[in-house]
Amino acid sequence: MEWLGLLPTNPAQVAPRVRSLKILDKEIIGCDACKRLVTWREEVAVTKRRAYQNEKYWGKPITGFGPVDAKLMIVGLAPGAHGANRTGRIFTGDSSGDWLYRALYRNGLATIETSTSRNDGQELIDTRIACAVRCAPPGNKPLPKEAMTCQPWLVREFQLLFPTVRTYLALGSIAWKATLDVLGELDEDLPRKRPKFGHGAHFKFRGSDGNIRLVIGSYHPSQQNTFTGKLTRSQLDSVVKKAGRFAHAGKPL
View 1 (cartoon, rainbow, N blue to C red):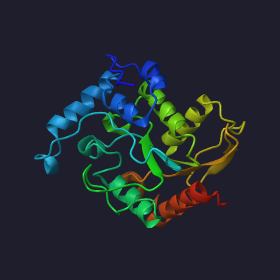
View 2: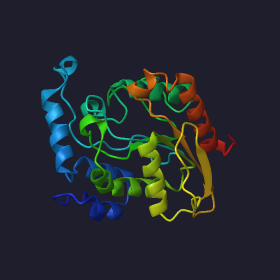
View 3: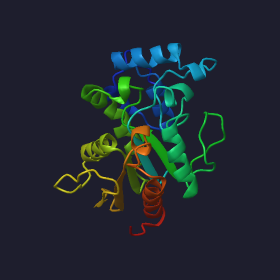
View 4: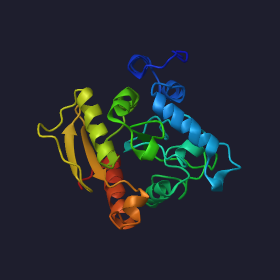
């Protein structure tokens, strides 16, 4: 299957037709569906932050990162303006990524402790990271309409990974909502009463293939949460450890 290359991009039309994560990533990179986000991500890539004046910013949508047979799926909110929007890899080049990759490394889910660029040699182990919104939004706050427009990309990514994924780790309330929305759209048998988000909140469900899966939440490792102590390193390590244990062996929390 060749790159579909529809212009302008309509994720709802394009995503369901994609047959592999490799092609999905190409389609995501070419997405221009949300004018406000396109304008912002490109403006940031030109004006830059003083510390990165000599760097070439990515300035495009951000794909998932990790193997195509991942057992753990991590969902974040959106790329950071001077993090992923600069480096081209999700949770890379900012403090949120420093926290996340350190926790993954400490729990045997990443080959190195840091993620600084797309060419730093980092590899994830049985883990893939994606985000609910693929473009850096102004103020780190995508509009509800933008999140809905972007959702088909995440739906298709979930579908393509469904045969191997056993755990979904949602970083923050928006990622939690996106994860539940996507699983609901895929007609998975979720609890009738929608589970509420909280750090360490979790529930299990029997997938359409008969396998038991876990959904678990964590506060997002944003500076707002880490600087204030709302999220500590031990708290993040604990949730990542639980997510990884269940993904690998279905071990109880």
